[in-house]
Length: 455
Image 1 (cartoon, rainbow, N blue to C red):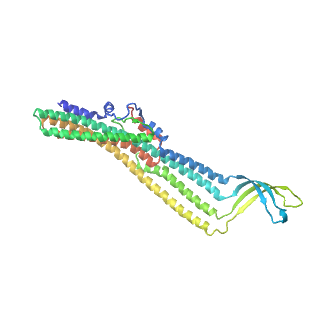
Image 2 (cartoon, one colour; image 1 turned 90 degrees about the horizontal axis):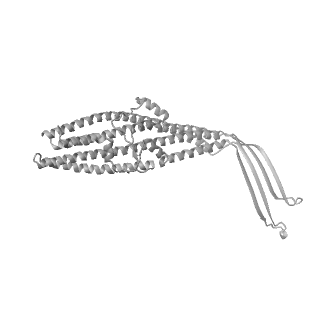
Image 3 (cartoon, rainbow, N blue to C red; image 1 turned 30 degrees about the vertical axis):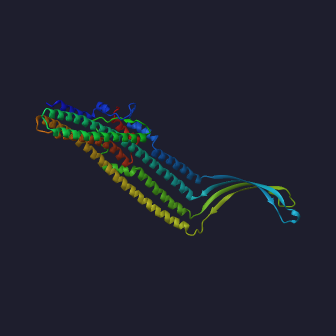
């Protein structure tokens, strides 16, 4: 039979995961704060996070730039007008030709490219640039999902750490009181009291550090989602954690090399580089444009027999042909430059494929290792609980000393903290795996959100 002290110690540590225990212990958050789900906080971050909003603005800018390129194959129309007041001083005898006059000119012109292969290639480049910008926006959204999830579970992890520290503090406090009573009645030495006091002082220091860490983690989450006093929903324990599906690293790598935003952006850059080579080669060839012009002019007559102002109207329509004959080697060297840049873009694609493949494999094995670690820590938690109870019983019958109980209790606390962190790491690791494969979407947090429970 365990003593009231040892039983209280076991209950304090064993009940660390109970929601009521957590609600009673955690007092750092705002009392009026309302708990939010992971999905709700992600939606808040989408409208507040500066990095994500900047990526959206960049995408809109790239889309407008693509529309600019399309204008290169469409007709252009322009209107110009001139009006001048002129003063003429001549050397004619008596200033016979000195006078002041004005003239006006209006011109309406239109042009349409008939044969400009470079303009068509620019349109294709703009379309590929827009595809690259879309991939970059997708990468920014995936990064936001992971950052919000990481900050979310960082807060939960800090809360758990504080919970376990306070549970240990309560247990050590009772162990210290028991040691003091036993010393007073002569059944224990002063060593037990001093050991318990030393452990109690250490736990108090750990509690202060845990409180500050929780405060910092909450500030980081608040800053990310644009809210104050955020209170994430909790993850109940025990919980069944999702395994990666499919459970095949090669399948994930194939998806990554086909769908990852960085690979798609690099491939788009290669396509743009290839088009740039063709455009540089096309610049050495001819161009043909259809042009039309209408001009109205009013100016003083220069014919003595027709004094006063004359009005002239001229309309013209035709084609313009241009062919560069000699440019000092600029066009030939431009072709060489674009060919070298195409080689660079091709190597960039290869580098992106290798990086994505490595990151995906690392993320996949990280999730599998995390799941194994969770199972091992769950077994270690049960073993540590049994070890603590055995040391408590041994202390009562005199075959164990006080420090054995304190060490066993500390080991159980550390195991619980490691287990809580391992669970959160698996959940975030699953999102990182999908991010590494380039297939992470906002809907992917719904299964995780379903595991969480309101406070």
